[in-house]
Image (cartoon, rainbow, N blue to C red):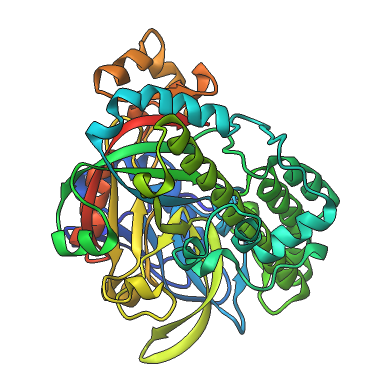
Length: 484
Protein backbone atom coordinates (compact mmCIF):
# COMPACT_ATOMS: atom_id res chain seq x y z
CA UNK A 1 0.00 0.00 0.00
CA UNK A 2 1.31 3.44 -0.93
CA UNK A 3 2.16 6.16 1.56
CA UNK A 4 -0.77 8.59 1.92
CA UNK A 5 1.06 11.36 3.80
CA UNK A 6 1.50 13.59 0.76
CA UNK A 7 -1.92 13.26 -0.87
CA UNK A 8 -3.18 16.83 -1.12
CA UNK A 9 -6.41 18.08 -2.64
CA UNK A 10 -6.42 21.01 -5.05
CA UNK A 11 -9.44 23.31 -5.00
CA UNK A 12 -11.54 23.41 -8.18
CA UNK A 13 -14.46 25.37 -6.73
CA UNK A 14 -16.34 25.62 -3.43
CA UNK A 15 -17.64 22.05 -3.70
CA UNK A 16 -15.07 20.19 -5.83
CA UNK A 17 -11.48 19.21 -5.06
CA UNK A 18 -9.00 17.43 -7.29
CA UNK A 19 -6.73 14.61 -6.16
CA UNK A 20 -4.03 14.92 -8.86
CA UNK A 21 -2.81 11.88 -10.70
CA UNK A 22 0.55 10.66 -9.41
CA UNK A 23 2.56 7.47 -9.14
CA UNK A 24 0.56 4.47 -10.37
CA UNK A 25 -2.70 6.41 -10.60
CA UNK A 26 -4.20 6.25 -14.10
CA UNK A 27 -6.56 9.17 -13.57
CA UNK A 28 -7.37 12.04 -11.21
CA UNK A 29 -9.70 11.81 -8.27
CA UNK A 30 -12.51 14.30 -7.68
CA UNK A 31 -13.81 14.85 -4.15
CA UNK A 32 -17.11 16.64 -3.55
CA UNK A 33 -16.85 18.52 -0.27
CA UNK A 34 -16.87 21.93 1.32
CA UNK A 35 -13.67 23.22 2.89
CA UNK A 36 -14.83 22.57 6.47
CA UNK A 37 -15.03 18.85 5.66
CA UNK A 38 -11.41 18.49 4.58
CA UNK A 39 -9.93 18.02 8.04
CA UNK A 40 -12.05 14.92 8.57
CA UNK A 41 -11.25 13.62 5.08
CA UNK A 42 -7.52 14.04 5.71
CA UNK A 43 -7.80 12.36 9.13
CA UNK A 44 -8.39 8.84 7.79
CA UNK A 45 -6.97 6.92 4.82
CA UNK A 46 -9.85 7.50 2.42
CA UNK A 47 -7.76 9.64 0.03
CA UNK A 48 -5.16 6.88 -0.17
CA UNK A 49 -7.95 4.44 -0.95
CA UNK A 50 -9.25 6.78 -3.66
CA UNK A 51 -5.76 6.94 -5.18
CA UNK A 52 -5.47 3.16 -5.05
CA UNK A 53 -8.75 2.74 -6.93
CA UNK A 54 -7.42 5.14 -9.58
CA UNK A 55 -4.54 2.71 -10.16
CA UNK A 56 -6.76 -0.23 -11.14
CA UNK A 57 -6.80 -1.47 -14.76
CA UNK A 58 -9.34 -0.13 -17.22
CA UNK A 59 -10.63 2.76 -15.16
CA UNK A 60 -12.74 5.23 -17.18
CA UNK A 61 -12.93 8.92 -16.31
CA UNK A 62 -12.08 10.22 -12.86
CA UNK A 63 -12.47 8.26 -9.65
CA UNK A 64 -15.03 10.07 -7.49
CA UNK A 65 -15.75 10.62 -3.81
CA UNK A 66 -18.99 11.96 -2.38
CA UNK A 67 -19.07 14.31 0.65
CA UNK A 68 -19.90 11.38 2.96
CA UNK A 69 -16.52 9.81 2.10
CA UNK A 70 -14.77 7.84 4.82
CA UNK A 71 -12.43 4.88 5.12
CA UNK A 72 -13.90 1.54 4.03
CA UNK A 73 -12.86 -1.90 2.84
CA UNK A 74 -10.82 -1.46 -0.35
CA UNK A 75 -12.81 1.41 -1.84
CA UNK A 76 -13.60 4.37 0.40
CA UNK A 77 -17.25 4.51 1.40
CA UNK A 78 -18.76 7.21 -0.77
CA UNK A 79 -16.58 6.11 -3.70
CA UNK A 80 -17.67 5.83 -7.34
CA UNK A 81 -15.59 4.42 -10.19
CA UNK A 82 -16.33 3.15 -13.71
CA UNK A 83 -14.38 0.51 -15.62
CA UNK A 84 -14.17 -0.49 -19.27
CA UNK A 85 -15.90 -3.73 -20.22
CA UNK A 86 -12.96 -4.52 -22.50
CA UNK A 87 -9.96 -4.21 -20.19
CA UNK A 88 -11.49 -3.16 -16.86
CA UNK A 89 -12.08 -5.06 -13.64
CA UNK A 90 -14.79 -5.88 -11.12
CA UNK A 91 -13.85 -5.69 -7.43
CA UNK A 92 -15.91 -6.86 -4.44
CA UNK A 93 -14.20 -4.10 -2.43
CA UNK A 94 -15.93 -1.61 -4.72
CA UNK A 95 -19.33 -2.99 -3.74
CA UNK A 96 -18.89 -3.92 -0.09
CA UNK A 97 -20.00 -6.67 2.26
CA UNK A 98 -23.61 -5.51 2.56
CA UNK A 99 -24.47 -5.87 -1.12
CA UNK A 100 -27.37 -3.59 -2.11
CA UNK A 101 -27.72 -2.06 1.28
CA UNK A 102 -30.36 0.52 0.34
CA UNK A 103 -33.25 2.72 1.39
CA UNK A 104 -36.94 2.67 0.57
CA UNK A 105 -39.23 5.57 1.40
CA UNK A 106 -42.98 5.37 1.93
CA UNK A 107 -45.33 8.33 1.89
CA UNK A 108 -48.66 8.27 3.75
CA UNK A 109 -51.87 10.31 3.96
CA UNK A 110 -51.34 10.69 7.71
CA UNK A 111 -50.52 13.99 9.37
CA UNK A 112 -48.21 14.26 12.36
CA UNK A 113 -51.23 14.86 14.61
CA UNK A 114 -52.76 11.56 13.44
CA UNK A 115 -49.96 9.44 14.89
CA UNK A 116 -48.12 11.40 17.56
CA UNK A 117 -50.14 9.98 20.47
CA UNK A 118 -49.48 6.48 19.08
CA UNK A 119 -45.86 7.08 18.10
CA UNK A 120 -44.25 5.03 20.87
CA UNK A 121 -46.71 2.19 20.30
CA UNK A 122 -45.96 2.27 16.57
CA UNK A 123 -42.22 1.99 17.18
CA UNK A 124 -42.76 -0.88 19.63
CA UNK A 125 -45.06 -2.53 17.10
CA UNK A 126 -42.38 -2.29 14.42
CA UNK A 127 -39.90 -3.92 16.78
CA UNK A 128 -42.38 -6.74 17.45
CA UNK A 129 -43.13 -7.34 13.75
CA UNK A 130 -39.65 -6.93 12.27
CA UNK A 131 -36.82 -9.03 13.75
CA UNK A 132 -33.61 -7.07 14.26
CA UNK A 133 -30.15 -7.41 15.71
CA UNK A 134 -27.13 -9.55 14.88
CA UNK A 135 -28.17 -12.90 13.41
CA UNK A 136 -31.90 -12.11 13.66
CA UNK A 137 -34.23 -14.56 11.92
CA UNK A 138 -37.85 -14.55 10.79
CA UNK A 139 -39.61 -17.67 12.10
CA UNK A 140 -42.84 -17.19 10.14
CA UNK A 141 -41.14 -17.22 6.72
CA UNK A 142 -39.46 -20.54 6.11
CA UNK A 143 -37.80 -20.98 2.74
CA UNK A 144 -36.83 -24.20 1.03
CA UNK A 145 -33.71 -24.23 -1.12
CA UNK A 146 -36.00 -24.04 -4.16
CA UNK A 147 -37.76 -20.98 -2.71
CA UNK A 148 -34.41 -19.35 -2.07
CA UNK A 149 -33.31 -19.87 -5.67
CA UNK A 150 -36.44 -18.05 -6.80
CA UNK A 151 -35.75 -15.17 -4.38
CA UNK A 152 -32.28 -14.55 -5.75
CA UNK A 153 -33.35 -14.80 -9.40
CA UNK A 154 -36.72 -13.02 -9.20
CA UNK A 155 -36.07 -10.41 -6.51
CA UNK A 156 -38.89 -8.29 -5.11
CA UNK A 157 -41.44 -9.71 -7.56
CA UNK A 158 -41.16 -13.02 -5.67
CA UNK A 159 -42.43 -11.25 -2.53
CA UNK A 160 -45.18 -9.36 -4.37
CA UNK A 161 -46.45 -12.59 -5.94
CA UNK A 162 -46.91 -13.93 -2.41
CA UNK A 163 -48.87 -10.94 -1.15
CA UNK A 164 -46.06 -8.86 0.29
CA UNK A 165 -46.92 -5.59 -1.44
CA UNK A 166 -48.20 -4.59 -4.85
CA UNK A 167 -47.15 -4.30 -8.48
CA UNK A 168 -46.88 -0.54 -7.93
CA UNK A 169 -44.06 -1.22 -5.46
CA UNK A 170 -42.05 -2.83 -8.25
CA UNK A 171 -42.69 0.14 -10.53
CA UNK A 172 -41.17 2.41 -7.88
CA UNK A 173 -38.12 0.26 -7.15
CA UNK A 174 -34.76 0.62 -8.87
CA UNK A 175 -34.57 -1.98 -11.65
CA UNK A 176 -38.05 -3.14 -10.54
CA UNK A 177 -36.32 -4.88 -7.66
CA UNK A 178 -34.41 -7.41 -9.76
CA UNK A 179 -30.96 -7.32 -11.35
CA UNK A 180 -30.53 -9.61 -14.36
CA UNK A 181 -27.99 -12.39 -14.50
CA UNK A 182 -28.31 -13.79 -10.97
CA UNK A 183 -27.18 -17.42 -10.85
CA UNK A 184 -27.88 -19.65 -7.81
CA UNK A 185 -24.92 -21.77 -8.90
CA UNK A 186 -22.59 -18.81 -8.28
CA UNK A 187 -23.27 -18.72 -4.52
CA UNK A 188 -22.01 -21.11 -1.88
CA UNK A 189 -24.09 -23.45 0.24
CA UNK A 190 -22.86 -21.56 3.30
CA UNK A 191 -24.25 -18.29 1.87
CA UNK A 192 -27.62 -19.94 1.24
CA UNK A 193 -27.73 -21.37 4.75
CA UNK A 194 -27.02 -17.93 6.22
CA UNK A 195 -29.56 -16.19 4.01
CA UNK A 196 -32.58 -18.50 4.17
CA UNK A 197 -33.67 -17.74 7.78
CA UNK A 198 -32.87 -14.03 7.61
CA UNK A 199 -35.20 -12.87 4.84
CA UNK A 200 -37.57 -10.23 6.20
CA UNK A 201 -35.22 -9.09 9.00
CA UNK A 202 -33.59 -5.73 9.60
CA UNK A 203 -30.18 -6.75 10.88
CA UNK A 204 -27.94 -4.64 13.07
CA UNK A 205 -25.69 -1.57 13.08
CA UNK A 206 -26.88 1.38 11.04
CA UNK A 207 -29.97 -0.40 9.68
CA UNK A 208 -33.26 1.16 10.72
CA UNK A 209 -36.95 1.78 10.20
CA UNK A 210 -37.72 5.46 10.74
CA UNK A 211 -41.04 7.27 11.13
CA UNK A 212 -40.65 10.92 10.14
CA UNK A 213 -42.67 13.91 9.00
CA UNK A 214 -42.05 16.30 6.12
CA UNK A 215 -40.46 19.20 7.94
CA UNK A 216 -39.44 21.57 5.14
CA UNK A 217 -40.23 21.80 1.43
CA UNK A 218 -37.68 23.35 -0.94
CA UNK A 219 -39.41 22.77 -4.29
CA UNK A 220 -43.21 22.55 -3.85
CA UNK A 221 -43.96 21.38 -7.39
CA UNK A 222 -41.42 18.56 -7.24
CA UNK A 223 -42.59 17.61 -3.75
CA UNK A 224 -46.18 17.41 -4.95
CA UNK A 225 -45.19 15.17 -7.85
CA UNK A 226 -43.45 12.87 -5.38
CA UNK A 227 -46.55 12.92 -3.15
CA UNK A 228 -44.74 14.60 -0.25
CA UNK A 229 -46.61 17.33 1.64
CA UNK A 230 -45.74 19.41 4.69
CA UNK A 231 -46.32 17.69 8.04
CA UNK A 232 -47.21 14.37 6.36
CA UNK A 233 -45.82 11.15 7.80
CA UNK A 234 -43.20 9.12 5.94
CA UNK A 235 -41.49 5.83 6.76
CA UNK A 236 -37.99 4.83 5.65
CA UNK A 237 -36.49 1.34 5.64
CA UNK A 238 -32.70 0.98 5.51
CA UNK A 239 -31.24 -2.51 5.25
CA UNK A 240 -29.57 -4.84 2.78
CA UNK A 241 -28.67 -8.44 1.99
CA UNK A 242 -27.90 -9.51 5.57
CA UNK A 243 -25.67 -12.54 6.16
CA UNK A 244 -26.26 -13.78 2.63
CA UNK A 245 -24.61 -10.74 1.05
CA UNK A 246 -21.81 -10.81 3.61
CA UNK A 247 -21.02 -14.43 2.78
CA UNK A 248 -21.20 -13.79 -0.97
CA UNK A 249 -18.64 -11.01 -0.53
CA UNK A 250 -16.41 -13.09 1.75
CA UNK A 251 -16.42 -16.02 -0.66
CA UNK A 252 -15.76 -13.71 -3.61
CA UNK A 253 -12.80 -11.98 -1.98
CA UNK A 254 -11.02 -15.33 -1.64
CA UNK A 255 -11.68 -16.13 -5.29
CA UNK A 256 -10.61 -12.64 -6.39
CA UNK A 257 -7.29 -12.78 -4.55
CA UNK A 258 -6.47 -15.88 -6.57
CA UNK A 259 -7.78 -14.27 -9.78
CA UNK A 260 -5.61 -11.18 -9.25
CA UNK A 261 -2.55 -13.43 -9.29
CA UNK A 262 -3.83 -15.49 -12.22
CA UNK A 263 -4.32 -12.40 -14.42
CA UNK A 264 -1.21 -10.65 -13.07
CA UNK A 265 -3.11 -7.60 -11.81
CA UNK A 266 -0.89 -5.38 -9.64
CA UNK A 267 -2.80 -4.54 -6.46
CA UNK A 268 -1.99 -1.36 -4.54
CA UNK A 269 -4.03 -2.92 -1.71
CA UNK A 270 -5.04 -6.58 -1.25
CA UNK A 271 -8.53 -5.38 -0.33
CA UNK A 272 -8.88 -4.25 -3.96
CA UNK A 273 -8.49 -7.81 -5.26
CA UNK A 274 -10.35 -8.10 -8.54
CA UNK A 275 -10.75 -9.91 -11.84
CA UNK A 276 -11.23 -8.77 -15.43
CA UNK A 277 -14.89 -8.14 -16.24
CA UNK A 278 -14.45 -10.41 -19.24
CA UNK A 279 -13.09 -13.31 -17.16
CA UNK A 280 -15.06 -16.26 -15.78
CA UNK A 281 -14.21 -15.10 -12.25
CA UNK A 282 -15.56 -11.62 -13.01
CA UNK A 283 -18.75 -13.01 -14.51
CA UNK A 284 -19.24 -15.37 -11.56
CA UNK A 285 -18.96 -12.48 -9.10
CA UNK A 286 -21.45 -10.37 -11.07
CA UNK A 287 -23.91 -13.29 -11.00
CA UNK A 288 -23.45 -13.84 -7.26
CA UNK A 289 -23.65 -10.11 -6.54
CA UNK A 290 -26.89 -9.84 -8.55
CA UNK A 291 -28.34 -12.66 -6.45
CA UNK A 292 -27.44 -10.87 -3.23
CA UNK A 293 -28.85 -7.60 -4.59
CA UNK A 294 -32.12 -9.34 -5.44
CA UNK A 295 -32.23 -10.83 -1.94
CA UNK A 296 -31.86 -7.30 -0.53
CA UNK A 297 -34.66 -5.95 -2.73
CA UNK A 298 -36.88 -8.80 -1.52
CA UNK A 299 -35.86 -8.18 2.09
CA UNK A 300 -36.89 -4.52 1.96
CA UNK A 301 -40.11 -5.43 0.13
CA UNK A 302 -41.15 -7.84 2.89
CA UNK A 303 -40.17 -5.44 5.67
CA UNK A 304 -42.17 -2.70 3.95
CA UNK A 305 -45.22 -4.96 3.99
CA UNK A 306 -44.85 -5.48 7.74
CA UNK A 307 -44.43 -1.75 8.28
CA UNK A 308 -47.79 -1.16 6.59
CA UNK A 309 -49.42 -3.97 8.58
CA UNK A 310 -48.10 -2.46 11.80
CA UNK A 311 -49.52 0.98 11.02
CA UNK A 312 -52.94 -0.41 10.14
CA UNK A 313 -53.10 -2.52 13.30
CA UNK A 314 -51.88 0.10 15.78
CA UNK A 315 -53.94 2.93 14.27
CA UNK A 316 -56.95 0.63 13.74
CA UNK A 317 -57.14 2.02 10.21
CA UNK A 318 -57.65 0.62 6.74
CA UNK A 319 -54.93 0.62 4.14
CA UNK A 320 -56.84 3.32 2.28
CA UNK A 321 -56.93 5.70 5.23
CA UNK A 322 -53.25 5.13 6.03
CA UNK A 323 -52.42 5.72 2.37
CA UNK A 324 -48.97 4.17 2.58
CA UNK A 325 -47.36 4.04 -0.87
CA UNK A 326 -43.78 3.53 -1.96
CA UNK A 327 -42.02 6.63 -3.24
CA UNK A 328 -38.81 4.83 -4.25
CA UNK A 329 -36.31 2.12 -3.30
CA UNK A 330 -32.65 2.80 -4.15
CA UNK A 331 -29.50 0.66 -4.13
CA UNK A 332 -26.27 1.45 -2.39
CA UNK A 333 -23.24 -0.86 -2.57
CA UNK A 334 -23.63 -2.17 -6.09
CA UNK A 335 -21.84 -2.56 -9.43
CA UNK A 336 -23.89 -2.13 -12.60
CA UNK A 337 -23.31 -2.31 -16.33
CA UNK A 338 -24.56 1.04 -17.67
CA UNK A 339 -24.25 3.22 -20.76
CA UNK A 340 -22.69 6.64 -20.23
CA UNK A 341 -21.52 9.43 -22.51
CA UNK A 342 -17.76 9.85 -22.30
CA UNK A 343 -15.89 12.15 -24.70
CA UNK A 344 -19.10 12.44 -26.75
CA UNK A 345 -19.31 8.66 -27.14
CA UNK A 346 -21.90 6.29 -25.66
CA UNK A 347 -19.87 3.68 -23.79
CA UNK A 348 -20.99 0.71 -21.72
CA UNK A 349 -19.07 0.60 -18.45
CA UNK A 350 -19.25 -1.12 -15.08
CA UNK A 351 -19.99 1.51 -12.43
CA UNK A 352 -19.03 0.64 -8.85
CA UNK A 353 -21.02 2.60 -6.26
CA UNK A 354 -19.71 1.95 -2.75
CA UNK A 355 -21.87 3.88 -0.30
CA UNK A 356 -23.31 5.89 -3.18
CA UNK A 357 -26.59 5.94 -5.04
CA UNK A 358 -27.86 6.62 -8.53
CA UNK A 359 -29.09 10.14 -9.25
CA UNK A 360 -30.50 9.80 -12.76
CA UNK A 361 -32.06 12.91 -14.37
CA UNK A 362 -35.48 13.68 -15.88
CA UNK A 363 -36.07 11.83 -19.13
CA UNK A 364 -33.79 8.91 -18.33
CA UNK A 365 -35.33 5.65 -19.54
CA UNK A 366 -34.09 3.68 -16.53
CA UNK A 367 -36.24 5.47 -13.96
CA UNK A 368 -39.96 4.87 -13.34
CA UNK A 369 -42.42 6.52 -15.70
CA UNK A 370 -43.89 8.43 -12.76
CA UNK A 371 -40.58 10.29 -12.35
CA UNK A 372 -39.53 10.96 -15.94
CA UNK A 373 -40.37 14.65 -15.48
CA UNK A 374 -38.92 15.04 -11.98
CA UNK A 375 -35.81 12.91 -12.11
CA UNK A 376 -35.12 9.87 -9.97
CA UNK A 377 -35.82 10.30 -6.24
CA UNK A 378 -32.55 10.38 -4.30
CA UNK A 379 -32.97 9.28 -0.68
CA UNK A 380 -30.32 10.49 1.77
CA UNK A 381 -30.90 9.46 5.39
CA UNK A 382 -29.10 11.19 8.21
CA UNK A 383 -28.62 10.12 11.80
CA UNK A 384 -31.53 9.35 14.11
CA UNK A 385 -31.30 12.68 15.91
CA UNK A 386 -31.36 15.16 13.02
CA UNK A 387 -32.83 14.97 9.51
CA UNK A 388 -33.11 12.98 6.30
CA UNK A 389 -33.59 14.39 2.80
CA UNK A 390 -35.30 13.62 -0.47
CA UNK A 391 -33.69 15.01 -3.62
CA UNK A 392 -33.99 14.29 -7.34
CA UNK A 393 -31.28 13.45 -9.85
CA UNK A 394 -29.88 15.86 -12.45
CA UNK A 395 -28.27 15.88 -15.87
CA UNK A 396 -25.10 17.28 -14.31
CA UNK A 397 -24.73 14.11 -12.26
CA UNK A 398 -24.86 12.12 -15.49
CA UNK A 399 -22.15 14.36 -16.95
CA UNK A 400 -19.83 14.33 -13.93
CA UNK A 401 -20.43 11.33 -11.69
CA UNK A 402 -21.92 8.60 -13.87
CA UNK A 403 -25.31 9.62 -12.49
CA UNK A 404 -24.25 9.18 -8.86
CA UNK A 405 -24.79 10.98 -5.57
CA UNK A 406 -24.05 10.47 -1.88
CA UNK A 407 -26.03 7.89 0.11
CA UNK A 408 -26.07 9.31 3.64
CA UNK A 409 -24.30 11.48 6.17
CA UNK A 410 -21.16 9.35 6.49
CA UNK A 411 -19.56 8.35 9.78
CA UNK A 412 -17.59 10.93 11.72
CA UNK A 413 -16.60 8.53 14.52
CA UNK A 414 -15.71 4.85 14.40
CA UNK A 415 -17.98 2.55 16.38
CA UNK A 416 -15.31 2.28 19.07
CA UNK A 417 -14.94 6.06 19.26
CA UNK A 418 -18.72 6.49 19.44
CA UNK A 419 -19.01 4.03 22.31
CA UNK A 420 -16.29 5.90 24.18
CA UNK A 421 -17.98 9.28 23.57
CA UNK A 422 -21.34 7.89 24.75
CA UNK A 423 -20.11 6.80 28.19
CA UNK A 424 -22.11 8.37 30.98
CA UNK A 425 -24.72 9.86 28.66
CA UNK A 426 -28.45 9.13 28.77
CA UNK A 427 -28.86 8.85 25.00
CA UNK A 428 -32.43 7.53 25.09
CA UNK A 429 -33.46 10.50 27.22
CA UNK A 430 -31.54 12.97 25.03
CA UNK A 431 -33.40 11.76 21.96
CA UNK A 432 -36.70 11.68 23.79
CA UNK A 433 -36.17 15.32 24.77
CA UNK A 434 -35.86 16.08 21.04
CA UNK A 435 -39.23 14.44 20.44
CA UNK A 436 -37.75 11.21 19.03
CA UNK A 437 -38.70 7.77 20.30
CA UNK A 438 -35.89 5.27 19.74
CA UNK A 439 -35.83 1.51 20.22
CA UNK A 440 -32.64 -0.48 19.65
CA UNK A 441 -31.72 -4.14 19.81
CA UNK A 442 -29.01 -3.27 22.36
CA UNK A 443 -27.52 -0.35 24.28
CA UNK A 444 -24.29 -0.90 22.36
CA UNK A 445 -26.12 -0.21 19.10
CA UNK A 446 -27.48 3.06 20.48
CA UNK A 447 -23.98 4.19 21.46
CA UNK A 448 -22.46 3.18 18.11
CA UNK A 449 -25.24 4.98 16.24
CA UNK A 450 -25.47 8.13 18.39
CA UNK A 451 -26.11 11.25 16.27
CA UNK A 452 -22.60 12.61 16.81
CA UNK A 453 -21.17 9.44 15.25
CA UNK A 454 -22.22 10.88 11.88
CA UNK A 455 -21.47 13.99 9.90
CA UNK A 456 -24.21 16.61 9.76
CA UNK A 457 -26.29 15.35 6.85
CA UNK A 458 -27.56 18.87 6.11
CA UNK A 459 -24.04 19.97 5.17
CA UNK A 460 -23.47 16.83 3.09
CA UNK A 461 -26.73 17.43 1.21
CA UNK A 462 -25.90 21.10 0.69
CA UNK A 463 -22.69 20.08 -1.10
CA UNK A 464 -24.36 17.77 -3.63
CA UNK A 465 -27.15 20.32 -4.13
CA UNK A 466 -24.71 23.19 -4.69
CA UNK A 467 -22.56 21.01 -6.97
CA UNK A 468 -25.64 20.25 -9.06
CA UNK A 469 -25.56 16.47 -8.55
CA UNK A 470 -29.09 16.48 -7.11
CA UNK A 471 -31.80 19.00 -6.21
CA UNK A 472 -33.17 19.28 -2.69
CA UNK A 473 -36.92 18.62 -2.57
CA UNK A 474 -37.91 18.04 1.09
CA UNK A 475 -36.42 17.58 4.53
CA UNK A 476 -37.71 14.89 6.89
CA UNK A 477 -37.61 15.16 10.70
CA UNK A 478 -37.48 11.87 12.65
CA UNK A 479 -40.23 11.10 15.17
CA UNK A 480 -39.62 7.44 15.92
CA UNK A 481 -36.75 5.11 15.06
CA UNK A 482 -36.27 1.37 15.24
CA UNK A 483 -32.55 0.59 15.08
CA UNK A 484 -31.05 -2.79 14.30
